[in-house]
Structure formats: structure tokens, C-alpha cells
Image 1 (cartoon, rainbow, N blue to C red):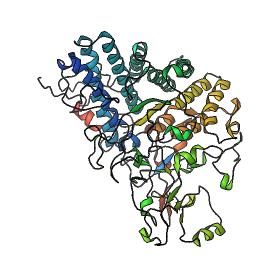
Image 2: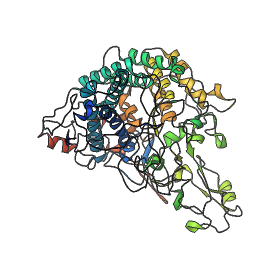
Image 3: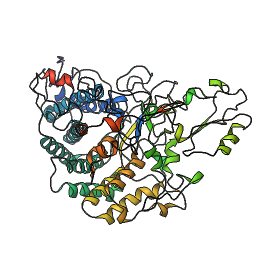
Image 4: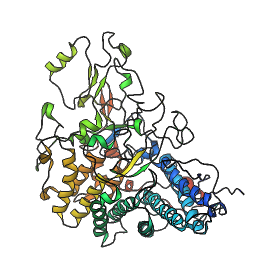
Length: 586
């Protein structure tokens, strides 16, 4: 086979893959794609699985989380930042320095080109049944739409490449955002008509994926400059269709929030779309030090338990990257409140009606290394070592803990949170890893049915159907309610507004690589929610020095109006000799 090295929009690599007969979607890059190869049965199969392989580059590594969760109301600075994405530092968040978005751009366009190759040459492939070709083309269209959806949310106007590029080109210009959205919707609508109802293998996209993504795309376009009059109606239509027919797609909400992210349930009934990883070193980066397609979701939100008394780093508790420290807003959003915002819980009862906080955040660590880090040799393995109570304790209670036998434990109250110490989001915990520092081997969930309910609610709110919106929100909230308290989780139609919907999305979807897009997409009476919330220190806590470290960031002071778009990578502008232009402000 003649090898043609492809370079498109600054990318000097193209992944391809062999067809896989395993029971999961398994990518195994073997060569670059060529037009002749893409017209064979092996080639078109490889081309599609190659497009899937790029998802591991977008959903699981540092760039994936810094571009979607950092710089939002849910998280503040951890011990590491990425080019100002956490605090909008204008000297760091520049077209030249923003390596995370440069990486996203390169991966997305590389895989868009792979999809283009499949769509251009795949119809001529020999050795496949017509039904198989139709399915593969539908998957390629949906995945191309997904990559473009990421790009248009990040950058606005972007190059719209729909043909396979098999030689380097500098003739690259940005298409209007309206054209990009039109193409995304076209791809998804065409895919919807022919794609499989259920996945042949875990990890493959389906009709349910297309419905969910169509709803989200219409909802996002509705608040953009490309908006169309029927966007909210279409968003509601597709979300409602998925909700109404969920059983036909093999979907359903898990009965308990703890089951959603239970290790081993990443392909469970609530999952609409995920990205596959596993413990095969030829498939996933797992050694902990070789980067490129790695899954470090389990480490992103993990605080530094290993520096505290009687603790040592281990497989069970995970590798503490401490990239994103939870905000007070996120922690306190789980407190049950009435329609006026007054807390209905206090003391030890805080966050007990809504069970998501105690199920999705680790607040207690147990001793695993007595005497470590100036601890006590009398400490007992399995006894409490660290407690984040989520509230300030009385002096008497603290004294009682300090006098505890055989050994006291460390208490870190909210006023003591720092870039290193805070409750840990545990949705991505990966305890089947084979080494202490090894990367996660779990698939990452990207879209799930609970979000579909919230998408429907958001569209219905904008359509003035607050009864329906409240009903959809209450489905999600009641699932999260403690036994005997589910009715207390219900809200009324009068409580539905965009801020409540955003807060509910925070409670349900925190950490799931969507928050920056949620804030950018929405507005209230004061303006764009990204700007409104990040300028308010009740959401974006100010940088504060503390005896045990620092907490917060300068995001509220730094953020500017133009930060609702990301900088176009400077290397892409340079490579196109300036034909690719920069977003305003950068």
C-alpha cells in the first residue's frame, strides 16, 4: 500500500485502525489512511474506528478537563493550571500559549479528515454488505458532527472541511458559525435516519446518541448569533423523543446515583455515549508516564490525601493530580433549599436529602500507612484518617477529635480548603489499575440519559412550558433524593428559570466535561452566564492566602467579554499565512 502522509490544518498525523471483532470498540492504529485503502472493507472499517480513536484524545486527558471544567463556577485553582484556563490570566491565555486548545483543534481536524475520507470513499468500498456500509457512514457522520460541535463551541467560526485532504494545504479559512451549525445538523439528521438503534459494541454511537446530540446542538445554537426561530422547539422535540422511547434503545435511568459511575458500569443502561479505554497497553496509555490518549479522569479532582498524616499514595485512593479544587458554590449547591433559597438543612444533616454529594464526593479517607507524614504509629489501618465535614465545627468538637484514641484524625473544614486539600469528586475512580501511578482503564461517559431530561427541561423553559420543564427536572432530582425524602426534592414550575437549570446541571453533571459550554451557552437578565458568574466571587472565589496554603483564583478580576470564545491557535494562523483569522481580543 502506498503511504500518503496527510497534513491538514496544522496536523501532521492521522490515526487509523484495524477492524475489531472484540466485544468493545478497540482502536489499534496501524497506518495512515489512503484513498485506495478507504475503498476496501478493511479500510472503511479502519477509518471509522480511527475516528473513534480520536475521542480518547478529547475526553480523558488534561486538555479535555481544562477546556471544559476549568474556569467555571464549579472549580477553582488546583495545584496546576493550563495556560490561564482556570483563572483567565491574560498573559497566559494567549494564541501562542494555549496548548490545550491547540491540541483540541489538531485532534478534531485530524479526525474530521478521517471521517471525510470514510464518507468520500467508503460508498465505493468492496467486500461489505450495503447495510454495513450504511451503518459505518452513519457513524462517521455523527462523529464528524461531534468533533465540529466541540470546535464551534470553542472557537465560533471555524474552517469547514468536508473533503478528504491528502496533501498539505495552506488554503484554510474560517466558515461562518451558521454554516458550521447547518452542517452539524445535516450530518446528525442524515445519521439519525440510518444508524443502528442499539450499539453492536459498547462505545459505538447509535440513534439515541444522534437524538441527544441533536437536542444539545439546537439548544446551543439557539443562544448563538446563528440562532433560528425553531431551535428550542427542535431541541425539545429530539430530547422528548429520546425520553419517550428510551426503552426501545435499551436505555433507562439508574435507580440510584451511586450506580451511574459504579466501576464496571460504564456501559450501563443510562449511558448514551462513552469513550472506551481498557487495560491493554496497545490500546490505552496505562503506565502513568507515557502521554497521548491517556485517561487521567480519576486523578484530575483528587486532592493531596497522600501528604496528610497516616496516609500514603495507593491504588485504591488514586493518584492526586489536584488540578481542580471544588468551589464553595458547588459544595453548597447540594444543600436542600426552599423556593426563596433558605436552607432547609443544617449541621450534620447538611446535604443528606440530596444524596449526590455524599455518593459522588469523597469526604472521608481511612488510614493506610500508620505514622506516615508525621502521623501516629498508634493509628489503625481502616480507621478514619481525614474528614472533610463540609461545615465549620465547634471548638468542642474539634477538641474531642484531637483527644481521640488510639489516634486523632485530620479535619479540614471549608475555611481550610486550599489548592491541595478539598473534597474529591469520585465519579471517575479507577481501582482496577495495576500500579499506583498508572492511568485509568475505565471508559469515560460523555452523554447520559439524566442530561437528556435536563436538555428537555431547558428547551421547555424557553418555550414557556414550565410545567413540563419542572416535571423533567424532578425526574432527575427524585432519583437523587434520600429514601423517604424524594418528594422534598421536587420543585414547582414557578421555580424554573435558567439559573435553577444551571444549578441542577451542576449538581448532576459536575466534572463531566460540559460546564464551560453550559455557562457559555446560557444567559440571564444580567448577561452571559459565563461572564456573570465568573465575575461574581460567590461563584468564583477570590484568591485567598491561608495558613495551610491558598484557595481561589483571580478569575473574577481577569475574565473579559471576549473569553466566551477561545483563542485560535497561533500555529494554525501561521500555517495558513494568515488566512485563518484570530478571535477578537486575543
